[in-house]
Length: 111
Image 1 (cartoon, rainbow, N blue to C red):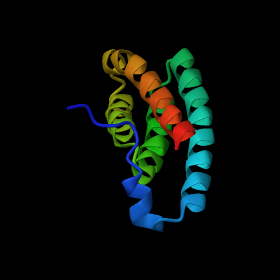
Image 2: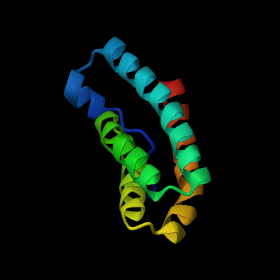
Image 3: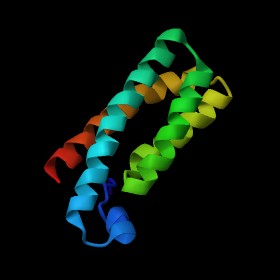
Image 4: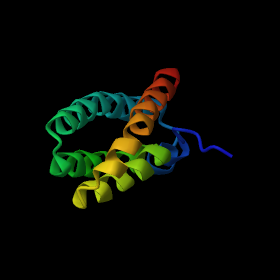
């Protein structure tokens, strides 16, 4: 069974049923995803394993906080691959990474 891209129970656990706060956090997170995606693209173009590691690390914790667990898990994979300069793993994970970002942003837009 495929895990949903975004589980809002994570935010509810942190902030209760305050939907305005949840929407504000999700909006900020969505904007950060756009920034992180640009950083990832720059690192990919430069073939900077350190850059991949850095952006994946930043995304991992914020993704876990908002309940974007599949994206957080992939960021963990990318962070480790960046540490090891494992370009085979990085390259093979890129399309999943891009797809998960879009899936999460779509969920946020519908929340």
